[in-house]
Each structure stands twice: as structure tokens, then as C-alpha cells.
Image 1 (cartoon, protein in one colour):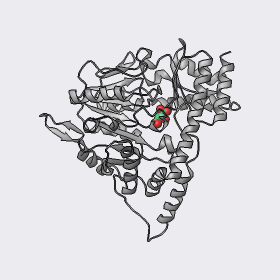
Image 2 (cartoon, helix red, strand yellow):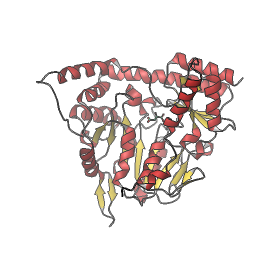
Image 3 (tube, protein in one colour):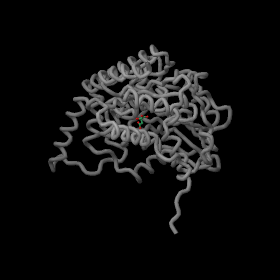
Image 4 (cartoon, protein in one colour):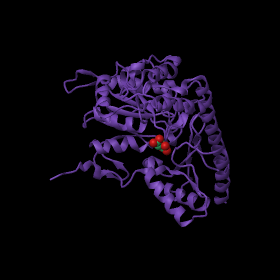
Length: 408
Ligand code: MLT
């Protein structure tokens, strides 16, 4: 008899963004003449930078010729991309990361999901609330939680991000072994200072814990005092793995390219308490389960680091930040408390006592605007919505006008 992994039965019925897409599709079927403006899922709308498109074309031409054709590439990524990443994203900011500590992949969603396979199921996991649902769901699938009751899975340590702590979780008061952090944060759009991030690194050292640091939105940081990478903090290389993506800075959500940084000194422990390096284990997993990102896509990603690519990606993120500023300004004017949107494409909005899903339905039905209900990101998200700046300025202006009218 084939039996299933019953931990899957603990999961909520559907993935948040699939649920939202279903509601929006139903609305569109029932209201075919209403134009919907999507400020929900963080999916980019602007075309790939010219530098990337040009590199992609050139690489496709190479693939069309026997002399320059490439088959399987290195699973970890081509050196030309790994070296560019190490130099531009880390070494230029004083973070001593080498090219062979970078693992190129097809997405930060997959990497943040897959990394937990390396650890036992009896570890204590600390997860922020609200949170990008992937961290939570993959730990549920792996069997690290009890059942879901009263909005939470048993067996986890939830790190509340609320108005009281300015939506930046504080250190756990108990022993935890695996800690998920995301800055600039999805969904709240908040950032963390170097001093506060250093406290997490110190906690991880003290408690022999590991931090999984999701920096997928670092390209939106404009405040130079803020860390873009956890490796800007002394001692982080031993206790942190970092996830990055080309999705939000260079518009690769449909193109797919990301990377994970596993420093060579980063460690976990075996059941005897002996240190085990994570780098060779992740390398082993990556080589066994992944065949690498395609050559043309890696060439396109490497073009992000060219002079033109840097200017063009800055132009893209500047554009989205301009949208974010408009959203925050208009929602604030309408009387809502907002955070995020200044070093982040997300604005986290207090619904003034409204239920998150009711607020979502109201904005969809009355304004034709799609947001993300905060409750979908966790119990602490109840009462909030998230608006994303990923759309054209014109659409954001229109959406804000419609929301203003809908709210009377
Ligand atoms: C989001 O809207 O939270 C993100 O787009 C999700 C993702 O990047 O997978």
C-alpha cells in the first residue's frame, strides 16, 4: 500500500497566492468589463533590462552553433556569474565571500524551501509572523510542526512582528536552532539596522543556531547605513546562509535565476555535537537534485553586473520605489498607518480594525484593486493588507484614486 506523508495534510488548503489568484479570476469572470489592477503578488511588470536581453540573445546564438554550444553546465553555476556576484554583491561591500561559496539556482523560493532538508526534524525552528508562507509550509511538509490550531502550527517558535516592535521581531527568549529572517522584509517592507542584525548573529553563535537570511529585496535599499547582506556583520559567515534573487532587481520572475551563499565556515552539528560544515552538504544536495540554470539565463544574469546592467536595474528599482512612495503617501493621507515602501517594494497597511480578507474583498469589488491580505502571512498579519509597488506608475496612480473613491 502506498502511504502518503501525512504532514502534508496539516497544511492549509491552498498556497496563499494561488488562493488570491482564484478569487481574482472568479471576480474577473463575473465582471468581465472591470479592469483589475494587481498590487498583490510581488511580480514585476517591467521588461528585462536591455543589457540582459542583449546577453540572452548572444548566448542563444552561441547555443545555435556546434562550436560554441554548451550542454550540461556546472550545477553550482558558471564561474563568470559566480565571480561577478562575489565581486559586486559582496566583496565591494566588505563582505569576504568567494565565488565558490555561491550556488546559482532557479529561484530563492526553491532554495529557501530546499535548504531545510539538511537539518533534522527535531530542531526548534523560529519563524517570523507575518512571514513569506514558503518558510512555514516547507517545515510543515518536513514534519517539524504539530497541527494547525488557532492560526498557528504547534512546535514552532513564532517571532511576532507587530506595531509594538516596529514590525522587526525581537530575539527569542528560548533556545532555537534554525532562524528565518528576511530584510527588507516580505511582507512588511521593514528593514533591519546593522546593530540589530548583529544581535541575531550573536544569538546564533551563543545558541549554536543557524540563520537563513532572505535578502531577495536588497536592491531596494537606498539607506546606505542599512546592511544589504548579513555578511556585512562580523562573524556571520559561521552562522548564516543568504538567499538572493534576480527576480525583483532585474525582472527575472519569469526568467528564473537566483543564488544561495553558503560560506565555507558555515556549520551545523551532528548528533554527537561534532561540527559539520554545511557547504559540502549543500553542494552534494545541489549536484544530486539540480542540473543548473541554463547557460543563456546565466549570461543574462551576469549582464546585471555590467555598467549598463547596473544602471538599468537601478532604473527599474527606482521606478518601483517611486510607486511605493506614492502608495504610502496616498494611503497615509486616507488615514491608514503604513510601514515599508521606502527601502522596499512592499507597503504594510493597518486596516483600522477591518478583517484582512474583508478588506481584500472590498478593494477588489469596489476598486478593482488586488492586494494581499495580511492574515495570509500569519496571525499577526490579521487586520493588515500588503500593497505591492510592482506595476506601472500610471496603474498605481489609478489604483490609489480608485481606493480613495471606494473608501469614500
Ligand atoms: C510575494 O508576493 O510575496 C512574492 O512575490 C512571492 C515570491 O517571490 O515568491
